[in-house]
Image (tube, rainbow, N blue to C red; front, side, top):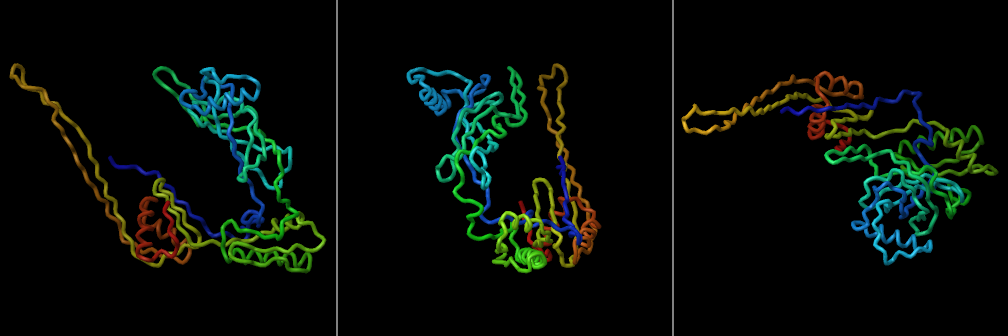
Length: 365
């Protein structure tokens, strides 16, 4: 059978003059980042959907250790409960967060539990990369997926073995670094680029020259812009003003292709040298229509199935067209004039790159 493709062509057009973005959307303050936390715990109260202790010995050991800490000795008992599941708890600790603040936590099953719906996570320490405990998580899980099964059929929607506890983690330890203790202010670009770094520097200096009479920004490299705040001004207020300044970021010429979904993303700086292109499609259809050959009565023959295979091949030719453009709208009009689907455009762009006529980076995912 002929394969059917569902394809999508996405084109990033050039920004108009007024389409500028804030610095806070394309750069972040160096040293200000989230910190990842992880912990191991138990979820209780499951309705027979927890781990089977025979297949998950770590769950049984954890349950025994928890009961021992509560004064219940079950070391010699053979536990057979299915209401407990071992889980891994993860969370992100924002920068400069203080003790007692709440954060969201995610809970993922570690054993062979079929669902965490209705469970409650008991107090679980969350550790940072340095091995220190920075938060403790506990609370009832919110699970969006479900799984139901009968004797002959089962139905599963979403992922029932993953849940979330909004505000389920409490910060128990402050991060060692404070905002006021940052040795030097610097902005880091999300997408490093020399021209964008220079534009950010110039935009900040124009603003501070007009407001404070001094220049405070200097580009260090294509990723970093150093800042020197004015004297007698709080760093928080200074950064809030800098982040609101708008600039127009530059971007490299790039074409991104995802052959699995037929997605093509063309950047606004992409250009193609003038080339002649033709593209044809070959479709081969193979169908099976077996027939039954039955002998006449009393002939002593056997009924057999005779295979019948039909093969049909069709090739549609394409016209030779000239494609080339110094800007994106001209390039798009040239590709649309050929009348191709995105799958055909993917093949053509790969061939143009091989020919050396695509003046852009080709990224195939």
